[in-house]
Image (cartoon, rainbow, N blue to C red):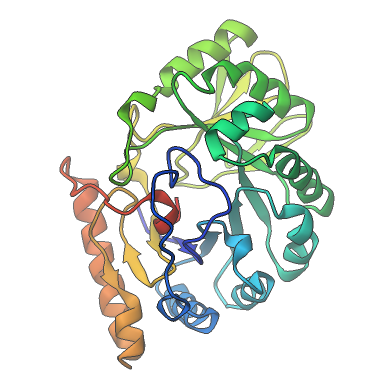
Length: 328
C-alpha cells in the first residue's frame, strides 16, 4: 500500500473535553513557538507532495480554533500535486467558517458527533454545544462541503442506545454516519468504554434490516455520493431497503493496518507513521536547524520504513500522547 495521505494537526487545543480524549488531562497547551507555523506546514506539505502525498486532512485538537485557518487551507490548495483537502472538526465553529473554508479550497468535512441528545452530549463533551454542532452541519451542507460525514465514537453504556437514532438522523439529513470503535489512546484509556462494531452492526440489522456491502470507488444512493479510496479505513454499507449509507471504522475488531496509507504530522512537528505508535520523527527540529528538504526527506523515508514494519507487526509501543495532541 502506497502512502499518499497526510493528516496534519494544526493545534493541540480543543473547546470540548470528550471523556475518551482529554477530559482528565491537565490544561497544558503547547506554546505558540512550539507549533509549526503555517509557512512551515506549507513547505513540508509542498515537499511531501513531490514524494507521493496527494491528500491532506486538517485536524486538531479543534482546527477551527487556530487563527487564520482559511489562509492555511488556501496555501495548501495551491500546492501542485495535492488533489484533495478535507478537515475533521467537532463542528462547534462550522457556522462561522464553513463558507470561508469552501471558498479557500476545502472540499469536505467530517464532523465528530457522539450524541444527538443534549444531556448526553454534555455528559460526553463537558459542554452544552449540541445546537452549535447541528447548525454547523447544516451550514456545511448548504455551502457545499459535501458529503458531510458524521463520526460517532460508540461508547459502551453511554451512547450505544443512540445507534438507531443516528441511522435515522443520517437518512433524514442526507448525511453519512460512521461508527468508530473506541481506541486505547493515551494514558487515560478506559477499556470499559469499548464496544465492538460487530455489536453495532447487530443493532442496526435488528432495527433496519440487512446491511449490504458497498465496495465501489463512488458509492451512490438517491441522496448521497461517497467517494472512497484504496486505504480508506471505513467499510461502507447500504442500510436495509433505505437509501441510507453507513460506515464502520473498526481498528480493534477488524484491523486495517496492512491497508493504511497515511502519515500524521502533529502541531509541534512530529511525524508519526501510525496513530497507535509512540514512534515519531522530529520534522520541526530538522526544519529549524536548517537541514532543509534533504533532512525532511530523510525523516519522511524513515517514517515510511517504520510504517512498513508496523504493518507486519503485532507489537506496538502504544501511543502515550492523548488523541487531541496527535490529530485523532
